[in-house]
Image 1 (tube, rainbow, N blue to C red):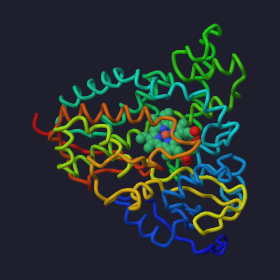
Image 2: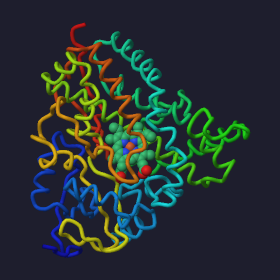
Image 3: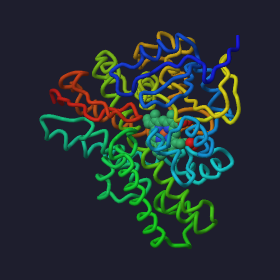
Image 4: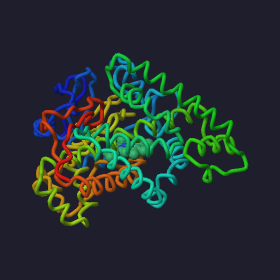
Amino acid sequence: MTHSTGPDATIHDIPNFEALLDPYPGYSALAATGPVLLLRSHRGVEYYGIFDAKLAREALRDQRFSKSSAAMKRALDRQGLDGASAGFPISSMKGGNLLNTDPPDHTRLRKLVNMTFSPRRIELLRQQVETLVVGLIDAMRQKSELDLVADYTYPIALTMICDILGVPRQDRDQFRHLATQAMTPGAPDQAECRTQLIAYLTALVAAKREASDPAVAPDDQPDVLSALCAARIASDALTEDELISMSFLMLVAGHETTVGLIGNALILLDRYPDQRRLLIEDESLLRQAIEEVLRFDGPVHQTTMRATLESVEIGGVTIPEGYFVRVFLAHCNRDPGIYEDPDRFDITRKPVPNLAFGHGPHLCLGSHLARLEAQVAIKRFLEAFPTYTLTGGAEAIKWAGTVIRAAAVIPADAGAA
Ligand code: HEM
């Protein structure tokens, strides 16, 4: 039966799920009332949430759910909100990027970076990740108390994305604060940090342009930002605002997410010692163990927002034009129609595709990079510290509280050598 929703529909008030120790019962309770629901976030933003995996795939391919900044602005205006304070730092960027455009602009911008993040090109970075990880492990061996985020997950993710983009290593550390705050809706210095990060990237891009050799083709440039500068000079393939906006997106999307994936894997392998044992005994389970972490508790629980360009009927609900919509990926990844006993963490599970990296044209650009980093990080960590424990258990973990499901502090003991 189709029932119309909109201003008169029941609104479900929801908490900041990413900051909860276990948000899954909350998702299930909501989903039990329907596959498509009108929600109000803890920041007062109203949107429709999709809780069904099949409908999720449909919606993420449906062009009537727009990511364009114009459509997003209309939906914000309808609620009397502005983008930055409502928690949309990426979609409210001045220039176009992958997450605030629809085709054909999205297709044009994505083509410029697709090759760098392809499985073949990312595989070439394996040795670089290995060297980085081994160095961090050696440093951890000298310490009695560890914070697995500061000592391990954060430096891995940040170093790799900075190297790929061409951000000098000595500038990296200032990003932790700037990027985290810029992506924390409601943080008192969110706007200031976002402005500082954009100013830094603008200066960096200008320096790269200055240094760029016009005779070298974009694909042969040493890093992604140089390649984008070269593409801008050689063929006007993107505007200056797009260049800055794309850099901002790749930098912020490219590190805390992976911090979350590696951190969540270490937390789960502590919580489920039988699964840790299985993985230590049989290294061939590594790839599917990472897929199971992505399914069971991936770092991105909800997609970014879309806005309806017209009224759309989905899952028996009519979403009016000009409304926000997002998919609850984490709940969809526990759909009992797709995964047997979905609330069980089981690294021997036959791999079935999951939605952790999204779906459709906006499918994550960095999925191969994130998988590579996680595989190397977990393999080497278990070799070095097979009996590690989390000090203080689950309660001692501090969650970041950003839009990403990632821990900010994971106190740990390295265990017996
Ligand atoms: C485990 C780690 C990661 C997860 C779970 C993840 C998840 C996601 C998801 C769910 C989306 C789609 C968002 C939507 O449809 O609204 C996305 C898009 C994106 N991700 Fe990731 N991501 C991860 C790592 C990375 C890394 C390492 C990069 C580095 C470049 C990256 C860059 C991007 C970009 C640029 C987009 C936008 C793609 C587009 O719109 O075409 N991500 N990611």
